[in-house]
Amino acid sequence: MGGVRRRDVIKYMAAAGIAGAFSSLIIPTIRYVTPPALSGAAEYPRSLLVFSNGEPVRASQLPVNKPYLFYYPLTDTQNILINLGDRNGNPVEVKSVELLVTMHPLKVPSLAVGGEEKPIEGPPNVAKYVFPGGVGPNRSIVAYSLICQHLGCIFPQLRFYPPGQPTRFRTNPPDIGQRGGVLHCACHGTVYDPYRGAAVLLDPALRPLPAIILEWDSSTDYLYAVGVVGPTIFGKTCNLCGDVVKDRVTIYTPEEVGGSA
Ligand code: FES
Image 1: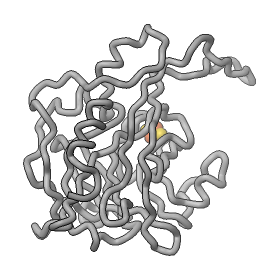
Image 2 (image 1 turned 30 degrees about the vertical axis):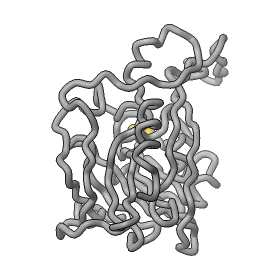
Image 3 (image 1 turned 180 degrees about the horizontal axis):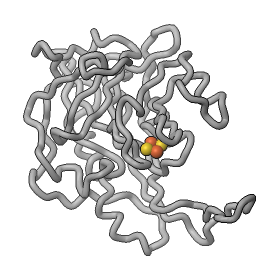
């Protein structure tokens, strides 16, 4: 089996999850996040990705820089699937990276007009996890929660802009949005980097988007969603608290769900 091996996935999942860490907000330290306390389903389903016509998605035929939407691990938690590429449409390998989850703002914002933000004293209160990188023949296919970690805006406010396509609204600084290749939330301007595990490039969100762990079966070219790593999905007390999807999930184009890409 190519892409991320199942053994590796289990390792990543063991190092991931965040819900348990939220209970330790008062301990100022750096550590790896612990698996979330689960209720309902005991583990993440292994779900084959299929198109709306029922045909399994073949990783080597997935168009570059074209977003798809799908629900996983719950029937109401939407995600984005992208075969990431450069501005010429060539697939780009997405490497594994260690990311931080900030548990509270690192600065105290001033409420006074013209006042200055002050850094919070003491060690940062953050958690770490490993984003496993892209899968598929070019290791370029990734999937992320499409529920903004700031206040929960979803598609079409939170959407992917391919490299070379500027965001619809200006970012501050503007060059980050102008060059494209980002996930941008139009609600309050958060920008995430899909080429680095959906790390935050511009706040106000503090946490990366949770990543859907994908598995590529090189013998069939099929793709599976097998887990979630990173912060808890926004609006959920745990990633499996709710109606869990079955062993097949459908991916849709933005047009199929009533929005332009
Ligand atoms: S909800 Fe996305 S930036 Fe506020």
